[in-house]
Image (cartoon, rainbow, N blue to C red; front, side):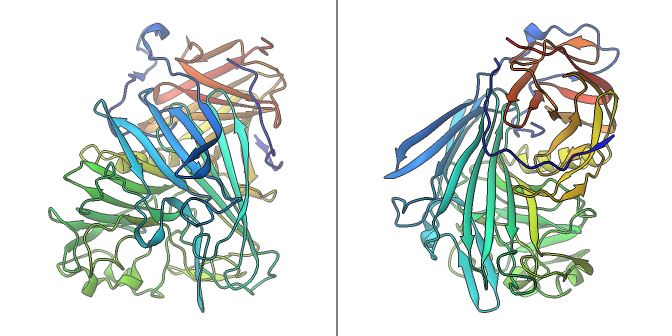
Length: 504
């Protein structure tokens, strides 16, 4: 096994021809050792990812990413640039619109504009004397297309913010063929302020997106996961007196809202388990945990707004039932303090605070959020081993960072939610062992790839996979790495081989 501590590249290219359930069914059968020969001709092919730079949308210059999800259906994300005032008089740097297919119908989800939040992905920090955000503070920044590959793309925003002191912020939106939901990865760097100057939380990514296909209707329910799973109960809409349940144990932090009428939901799902990284804000200094394991019938009396670990629609419930606010959360001190307390544990928010989240949109009847949670749960008990090449045991602790964290489980990079290994002479043989459950369209990131083109052969479970249907590859020559998404559902223990140094 190997430890990797190199920096991220500033640019990438592709010389070549996710684990994320879409919520609308799995197009692939599970591959098992006794399943017989696999005909890759039967697998649906996905078109290549496309990046349109510079198009004007809503009087704003944008970068638009079109990728293909777990069913090879197109999804499109429109990102406002953050280097000039946008068409709404704000500073850009957020997801303005996202669209995807569900049941053969196109769903388009646009920023609502409620309270001047015109999309999703704003950077918001609360601190002792107020709030700092990339909306009302008119914080301009920089943007870069880090990677625009055949099937994998990375878009980066950077800002200098001031939640009680200067803090540099790097956020990346990550899109991958075969992975239905984009990944949002962020790092707060409080080095410019110095230790223990900033005492802030983080609620990024933050915003209002009409995730019910631009209906902007009533919210039927809200939920989140810390040490336990919380959910409102009943048909909805959610009101200050809704009933709730907080009794089920939970392992993967998440936050979500849903609509029964639109059969739609939006959620944020962490790439790490609660036991690895405590997430969510312990804003009541332990008062929230007193509700764990309980039920109730009077939502905001039982759980006052300021106790919620994630910001959802709680501050709007007294006035309306259709607030589509979704945001993350972290305890005060998570940004800027060398030591802070959260849910009985001590952590550090200086010099850095980093995390990655899946931004999930899909159906509620077959819950897209639940599917993503299950995927990350399965990853926690999965192991990666190698007989050629080396499995990565540690790597950069966040985007824009060079310091390392140990990977849990070994080989799984939580920054990009990808299985990580280093090649030997442009080839590798690695095995996934999944004790229970399955992994849909697992993503691999191989380092030390010096070829100009994709590998000559890719096999899984002894079966040769075809490019653009059995697997989706991107060669990133800037980092000498190979991104590989498998177009299949993996179960049990199976071996992946990447062989030959393609130069075509």
